[in-house]
Length: 164
Image 1 (cartoon, rainbow, N blue to C red):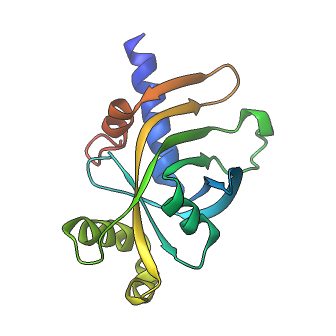
Image 2: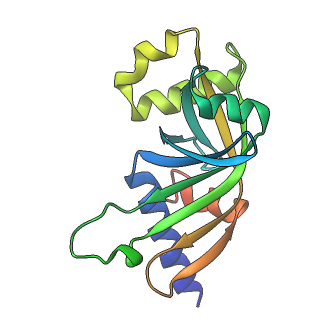
């Protein structure tokens, strides 16, 4: 049983670290709103980083209501049925970092390690980093392979030294 859990968490980590884009769910005027965001994982695996413009609807949404979700999904194709695609929904809270804070520096470092081409955008005044701290996650590895994951377990699975 423990080996199955370990295998599941390894598959979850491979999915999250193997993709670069997530669907971001926010509340927009009280209604669900979904957009696309590139993301990085902070060292230690305990949080996600996004870099967004204040002009974007999702940024305004997060500033008004910090509750968010991220959906990260296996790419389509390869003969895998749509219903069998691996995916994880991460539920948590988003918080903007202070422009010159240590947290902003750590976010910038993690984000640019993944997206070096985004460096010029980090100097734009209307862009800022948001940290998404997971509260829980739901991972579906395929048909009849769903599991709920705590924030602590997710962080351990995503920690740099845990990824195999």
